[in-house]
Length: 211
Image (cartoon, rainbow, N blue to C red; front, side):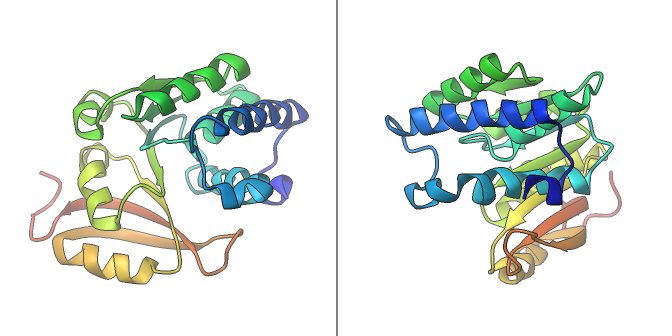
């Protein structure tokens, strides 16, 4: 299934396996993912995360907001590492200290190019927005709140890519009351009722231009 979504090397699959095994071990002590999804972790989490890279294939520096267990941010970092991308880095923003510790453990064990920022998104984004080339977030917040989080990155030209479930249309409608944005919807290869939403030019509704 992984290769159907994004071509990956044998070494990359091995690193992803290290990641999954660490998650299953840490899951015993803290709730990193929904227990009901553990039996399908490769499809529901790993393969689902791989879709992100197909939508911003040239991006080397990412910000993954509310990283949690590392989906999709760690998957992105592991794949970029396997490609030998010079200057690649995924900034994982996660305020929960225990989850941040898990993310650091995976980075150590896989050697993937990622950095953990154990703080609030609002406090971290200003220092990252100038260098980040794309932003991701999965199961973090509704689209209106996500727009607020990523506006600094969008102003610097980075696209924002969000996984959204079957209620994505309602979220787009609600977000449109407060925000203007250019939107591209991509049908999820994992769940045809879900979408990956790529947003650019995010700005408060009524604002004129980027400035």
